[in-house]
Length: 108
Image (cartoon, rainbow, N blue to C red; front, side, top):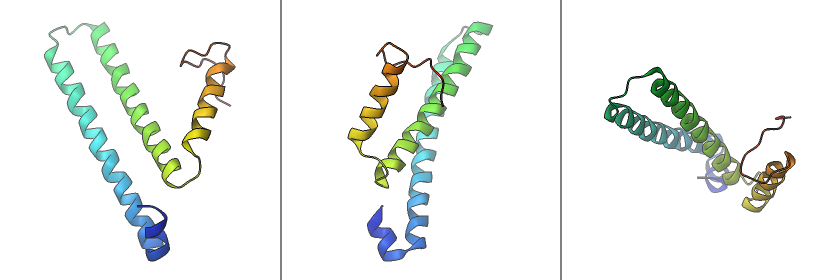
């Protein structure tokens, strides 16, 4: 995956990289779905609150999956280094006044 494939195989190599990324995303998605189903099935509580929490958990899991894929893609393409990404995350974390791994400010 990466520059070697692209340089040697051109567009075909890039398509192979994209296929690899898609396969990894599909694998992560399946793992998340399996964990959600087993968590939900194990619960006998069918209250509205539990369903709402489950929906939020699913949405959060999906967002984390897409963020993970985006970060891995940026790193694999050399668009950003781990150090640069860490510095940006720390700067954004501090923008709302509290470096607490949360952010409540505007996106743009």
